[in-house]
Length: 280
Image 1: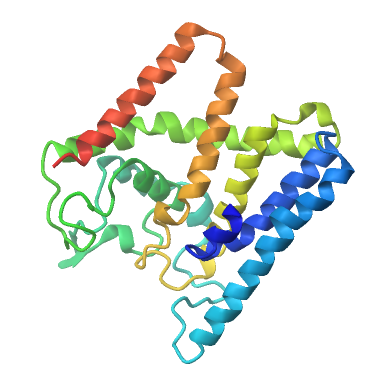
Image 2: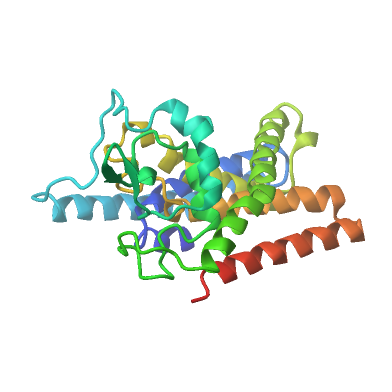
């Protein structure tokens, strides 16, 4: 039901039935569900949501038949966000630690430019990190169209600290997802390597949502200046990846009171920086 209703709010939900089908296949391979349960699972969480998504897509195509396309693709590559910018960090990414806002202008060659919107100016991982750990659109200031109104102090300082301290979450989060993918792939041959079912559900749902948005970016026109890199497009994936990270931490150090207390304190401190950065 959730997968079906969600498609009325966001088109990306249309890919999630495929993710649930993958989860079902994994759980069956690991012996966690019986074949008798697989058929109703297929109907309930794949076939029905897929039919709803197909119907909505058909209705949308008919309703917008006379309208110009909003999103345009160049399947030879646009050059605006290259695969290197998508996958690898850059030296320029260090400036992200100063927590620039979406509409922060800088002067270059006598012109006022918006560096966050310039093609290949920063890597996608750095922009994703910036958007997750700060109010990059300045929504708490004067809204997403403030056109360069400076973020006041101390909110600017809180934003910078949130972005820098956020590395303690994003880097381990990336490592946790890599470990998760390795465990899932390895479990196809050795089911004993399979992670717990809960993180598998959230992790696979997150990965499918994330890849559906991110992999097309090198082919999307205006990938930078139209903000296709903004984390608002992949928030469900970020939640899924966070669940994978904390599940892995719980599995490895969950019984160590001092370690769990330290992680709790770190999480509360990060949360405090976030609140401080948007407290106007």
